[in-house]
Length: 405
Image (cartoon, rainbow, N blue to C red; front, side, top):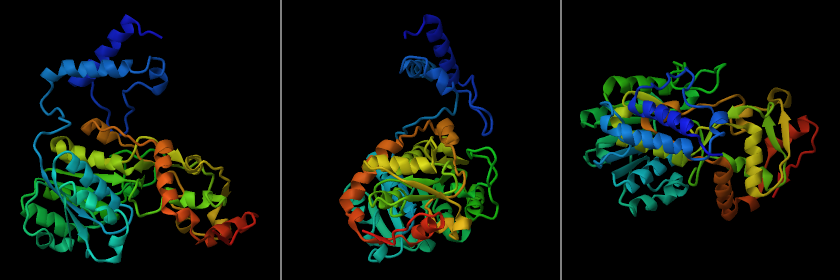
């Protein structure tokens, strides 16, 4: 359907108003002023985007002071203090790759010793990808950052290790004393209090007792240029914490997939490249990121049942989903299932508004890539036990399979 001249003019006028700043962005709990998808779908693909892009070009010469520059010219020296375990380790790895590709100087300080058994797992086994791109990898104690980095100086520090002030304070104090210009922190979306209005957005109430909250308050006091990033669940090559693999393990063995509750609980699962691109934009646009918290997540939710079905589709297999009540089955859902048994869904509103960030996560396609790696690893042929699964299946009247190969 052709776009009428009047509609094109109206779209261009509205886009120009947004680009020039005459239309403000919404506050965290205000409805967005963007057009609903049901309206946009009535227009030919690309028309709205072209109008907005053209309007922004026209408005650029008279942009207000403080307008965001998405790609800064100056190259920076960045230190990533990276955890040596858990799901967050892969964030530092992808962030380093993103920065190196943009021409920045990167040093990754991993907690512990290079020769430890933890370094035999991804993403640490792939650190050669960083060094071959010009990055530097060192190991040491975050409590003595100066010694670990040999007195090197940095423009930006990311703490992707500490979960409380005891762990992060030595890094932050060293960074401030060393004259670091920007301090970034990987927090967690788990600090939000449960809400009756999902999704979580920046500014929602948090658990004051959470260690990450104390860190956010401290770095806000110490640095004029700081930002905190709150991730949820993530997928991506190099992740050493099971997410999609938990589903693949059962699907390839033709086992039922036990999911607590109704299976309609919403969550957010992002490809780690999205987290890295958001962090990189904060480095390149420090003024836009300063003093803000960002939900470091993709922009779509998925149900727990939906994740099982998407994983099955990626594996080219069928899936049998079994719902259960953890209390009735006598199991701890935290141990029996990789995700929270509740709505746990955040929206990346601040990153879109302040940094101009866009999500690239596409779960159906990303999971196909992840399954290909899973299959090539041979994990699907290894002997595994599913004791908790069998207990759940017995509780709901299913015949359990004690061991599956």
